[in-house]
Length: 230
Image (cartoon, rainbow, N blue to C red; front, side, top):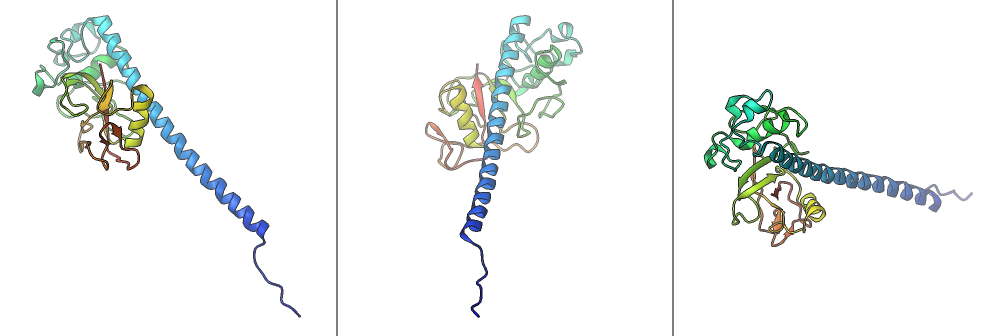
């Protein structure tokens, strides 16, 4: 008697391949949704903080962190959190009376312009003194030229914090500006994310955050950051 061959039929193999395709499609779609959510979160942080910055300036006629009358005019702000009111949010090393870029978060939060509650402390940022991005690195609003190629004039800017993949930075830049990491109102920044263990992002080569006028989206660098210019 002829033996009956055992194995999968073409229909069974086709069903398995369809199931595998659906599973892979679901995984890829999930990753795409996660990335889109992070892009939206980072853009929302930038937009919300910029709105708070200008709202504070409109109400108090001074910049958050730099405001010299924060103690008498904002509830629960100590006199040690007052800036020098020179029109620049600066660190003590850059001309500030205190680390005004950290005091800025206390001024904004206790004046009701941003969510959370932050209290000034000199030195490196902590979760008690500054907000973080989705990658757990600190945002910073400051007057400096640590953006783009670093050769531009100092100006106020809001840094995203680092540890952001270069393809996400590219998507953010395309959505809110011109897609150019060294031009426009949103640019690359070497800011190391503040706090402990910060590693400065590097640009200028194809395997790093950007090359020329394009973010590194083909070869992704996982430690990038940017700055919105005011």
